[in-house]
Image 1 (cartoon, rainbow, N blue to C red):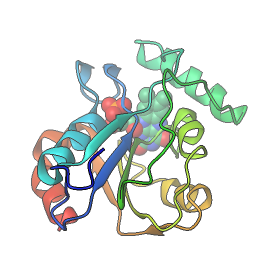
Image 2: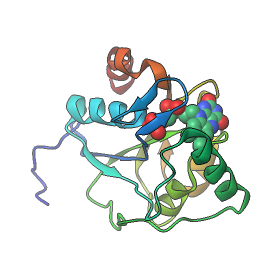
Image 3: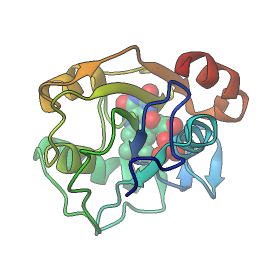
Image 4: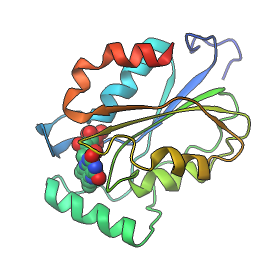
Length: 176
Ligand SMILES: Cc1cc2nc3c(=O)[nH]c(=O)nc-3n(C[C@H](O)[C@H](O)[C@H](O)COP(=O)(O)O)c2cc1C
């Protein structure tokens, strides 16, 4: 990619959003075509020009909410590292990495661990965001700090999943 590409952040820093998000049946908002975290990831893209990378496990979670909860809990219990459809291998061209995740059982879905553990975050600036239904950031910030060695983790943002369509202003203030 070009050093002088047009994907610069508001601070003039080249940015990337790494996120997980699931559509289908959701806790608070019924069946949705686009996951809550993806809505926020796209705001960041719109506001900063960031590139997006979506983490997608080979075996998708059930469309049914309760079944999805059970699957995700089992993965957490096993400390699993689910296989992904594609892997991001190199983030050297980016200065700012936004890490976005729904809260699953207090932290990120295990597929986010699969992806983040593959990358070298040395010297990067990281901004964590979550969508949730009560747990806020959960343990995501401390989990990210453990995985993403050598990075500076800046201020984080937690948004209630059912409020994402009203949250663009908050996202904008957070990015500034
Ligand atoms: C498997 C699963 C586990 C969840 N665990 C939590 C939780 O521990 N705390 C919480 O506040 N919300 C929890 N939620 C709600 C999600 O974090 C919330 O709906 C989020 O906005 C979903 O994001 P998405 O639409 O981008 O996938 C859970 C949802 C699912 C599907």
